[in-house]
Image 1 (cartoon, helix red, strand yellow):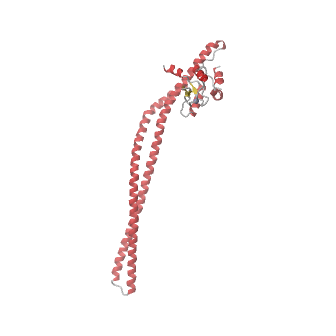
Image 2 (cartoon, helix red, strand yellow):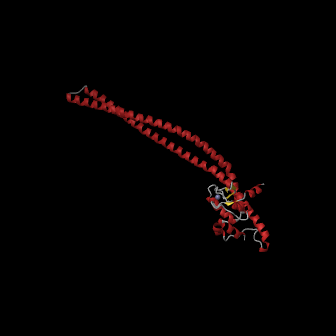
Image 3 (cartoon, protein in one colour):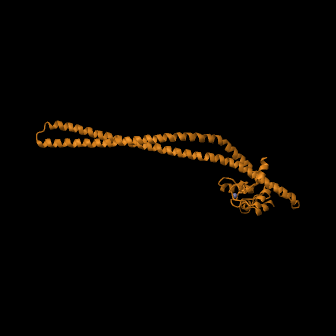
Length: 290
Ligand SMILES: [Zn+2]
């Protein structure tokens, strides 16, 4: 009978709750009395609905605490990951610059070798030029010497270019390294923060999950299924809400006065027509809290 009542009055029950749990036997429900005790049944039922709502409300509070922990922790791991990626990127870039500097150093050595070789050749040609036998030999050696001098000039020019490159890359490395140190420091702070939060909340979270599991057993099964579904779709994780300033505490849609009255009477499960969240009367919550 209670089942029928919920189905008739509540949008969630008709479409969602009963479809999923039609084979579920209603757990120890106080409403399964005989028809001649209609009045007392109604009182019992009313009390039972209030009880069901309060059970859900309590479960919601446990879940909200778990959500809070996860939100708190949820952003930090991502921040830590982003920072780790950034640091890795900078480290890779520094290594690349260092490789490039190595390459330029090898080129500098190459140019220096060219110069040394050219100088040795010039020296040898100058010795030979003293012993030439004719003008042709003299001109040819002179040409060679000129050529080697040009080679030295070119090598010097190239060396200068590579040295400038090394200087540029060294400046780049220093800049990136500075940024890397800055990021590494932030990363260390965030990592410590995350570890503290994990340490502090791990036990609490575990306890809350256990508490929620235990409490679930006390909640009306059909309602629980609806509740879980609403919670999954609700952005703030709230599946059971109170009325706040004549509006749904979940989606802030205005609730008509008659509906508010029905909620206050808690004779049936009433959900928000806009968002589907289950309503619980403020006074009912307060009476429980007191
Ligand atoms: Zn709503």
